[in-house]
Structures are given as C-alpha cells and as structure tokens.
Length: 253
Image (cartoon, rainbow, N blue to C red; front, side, top):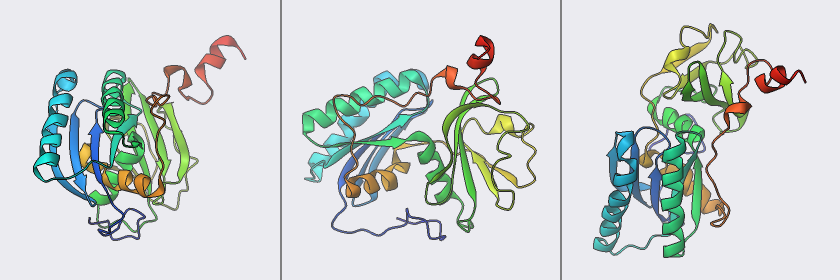
C-alpha cells in the first residue's frame, strides 16, 4: 500500500501478520463494501445513493463472500465505520457488521469516520510533509459539522465533536502549521473560516476501500469492538459547540 511519503504511521508493506478483512462503510450518502487481503483491496463495490443503503449493503456483502469462496480465503475480521454520520446508515452498517462477525465467529473492528476521512486525505496528497493538521468535517446541518483535528499520527488536537462553524473556529490550532479541511461538511466553511493558513481539499469522502490501513492497524494491535454492546458514534445534537454549549446557555447554567 502506498503512503503519502511523509513518514505516516499508515505506510506499511505486506507481511504475514496481515489479514483478510471485510470492510463496510455506510456513514454518509454513499455505502460501500471492500474485501482486503494482506493490506490490498481485492474487491469493492459502491452505491452512491443513500436511499439504497438498506437494499445494497447486504448484496454487496454476499458478492464479497463469493469472492472469498472463489479464492479459498477465510475472513479474519469484519470492519465497520462507526461514525459520526448518517443515523440510518450507521445503524444499518453496524447491525450488518455485528451479525457477520457473530456468524463468522471473527472480531469486529470499528473505524472512526473522521479518522477515515483524515487518512484518505493523507494518501490523496503526496506532497504533505507530515507537519500539516488535518480537519475532517461531516456535514450535520446549516453551519454545523461533526469534526476533529488530527496530526499525522492521528493524535487528536481537537477531539471529535459537533461544532457550529464561526469565524473564530479553530483559532486555537497552531498558526505556524498548514491546516487542511476536508469531507462533505468542509465546502460550506470556506466563506466563514478566515485563517491565513487554511486550505481545503475537495471530494474526500469515506469509502470501504479507504478503511484498509486503519482496519489492519486495529487487527494487528487486537483493538476490537464488543459485539454485544458496541453502538455507532453518533455525536448528539445537543453536544454542539458554539463558544459554550447552547443547551447550557438556554438553561442559564
């Protein structure tokens, strides 16, 4: 798998410790499934219409399993995007992934959607130095987004949260580093965020085939979800940040 040439933790070569992983992504309008073998995408399918998530994910999985049988492989884990994102899409994806993991008796891996978008941006721009700050954004509504800020080790400089974007947003980030915004919620912020070191990257949407690096990393480190109790990471509306929590402002506390 190719990396961004900047020393990212997500650049690695094929080795015997890697696995056969079924990846499911349904956090946004597009839904997709990918089969990865030893860190390489062997098969994938994408449906870009949100209304088809409930009907297309299962057939995609069936096609992936046919590929597994044809190549005489064995699924080692199921990976699913955990959000934030579409409530309906996340529920469908999580339910399907949990059922598969249970039926196949394999671990379930959770891939955070915001990290997934950041990783896709890393691989998109091969000119990154590794000093940039990546700010993925998932559209919520109006000027609200689900967002976080990461360095190239995927350490959170701003933790995942719902945020109402204003001209003061992200001013706490270092001004001597280039800040890149991406995801389906980023475009609407271009006329609001006035940071001199801000840049935008278009068309960075999460897909199942983008999950491979993060899913492999979790598999190697044995970081798995609890099949019984795992739920999507929705980020509730009342957690929106606009200076202070608006619910607290409303209640006067």
